[in-house]
Image (cartoon, rainbow, N blue to C red; front, side):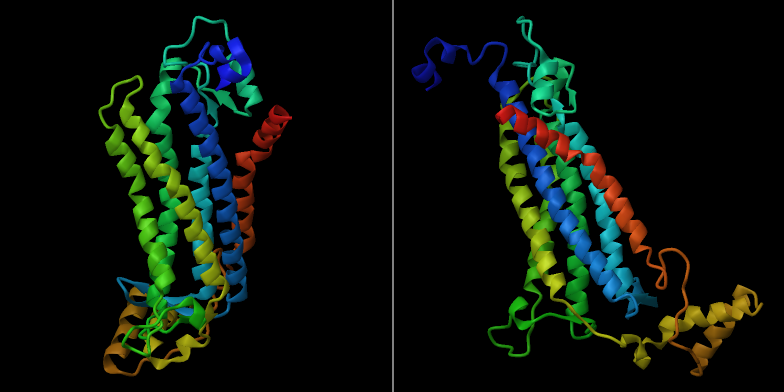
Length: 354
């Protein structure tokens, strides 16, 4: 088509380049763009989680270890925990972005070109931060780059999957901590009382599949020698749709959490009394009793059925119920976002296209 349109100029398309490095650079450009869109979606969910954490910071929630009642928590802590988890997830995505943002163009079929090309110029024109300097390694990066990006995506998916599992449990009638409008849950074909958390169940399943993506890519590229192999073509079928699926999961989670209804005064129920056992132990310790003695004293009171407690909580240390540190968590997120430097990439592409 180029030859028909341009004559001899169209016949020069392979001069100093190959399908290999052209596909490689297209993959890098695609991954770079998708990472930017994914980062934006994560930031929106992060902002919502921080907002909800601040809104419900005084509403207490049972905390569990081994799925047994453990200690008092709060909805503020619960929302904020997933916000901070996304910060760490974006750190790994930013590291993946640094690997993606290197230019393989000019490596040709994987062994360079005898033409005196200027690879630094194409790096600047396409907005890449660096070159993949070694032409053999530029080709070896195919598959490796996708695996690294998939690992970062899997981290985000793991956060969403755990959040979804919590939401499914908390909606269960035996927990009854949260609820959602009828239009965001589904019923049963025969049980009229049901309000199923289908959205969170689907997020959980999609995200668990995304967590398998790095392993799929690793197995498809295991034991490949250096140089291009056709096996690498199949990776696109796995990684390309994963971006859209993960973003959809993030958006669905945002929709659900925007409409969540939180039950207040949960811990006033006597069935949660033993959540406060550590609080009572600590009160005795603050009065001067050794911890082991205080532990045994409260334990005996529980066994003998005369455990007395207060639902008043006074935690002030960093990151606790009374001091969520959401401002510091938001500052960490801003710091990570600045390291992506999407503006530089987009400015270079704008200049190139105009």
